[in-house]
Length: 206
Image (cartoon, rainbow, N blue to C red; front, side, top):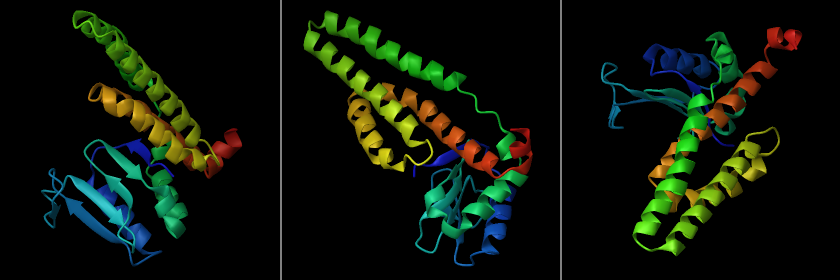
């Protein structure tokens, strides 16, 4: 499954509390703290990234300076305890805002369509412009497939979506980095669905 995300700046207490909670269910997990540069550290004052890894050394949860990242498929028996903790921390109440994602994707389309046209005309390279438009179209298709992959029981679309997205995005980098907020939004929405599925208050409201 693709990673799920929620907006949360790095909080050492949050990561430590989650680690201690999960350790009650699985004492093989480990907590790794990293500096801003990604180097391991045991000094909590220097920690900017926190990772909780399973017995196979695969990250099931991570938190950086801007968001929490949940690798739900790697959590195994810890899936429900993890979701329960996030509900307690009111993550399920976070609104998923797509304004920035839509704006960034729009800017990406404009950059490739307009700036690409100007550049191609100035350099008399019409084939280059056609290539850029093709990559743009493939990127949009990849985003559409990725959105579908985040829906329930559609995990099989994950790998094809990533491949298609990469084919379109890599030739148009670094402009294609502007689609990252949209991908993050997909992950936020998926996490919200999982959290609210098991929330009694939400079930009653629905």
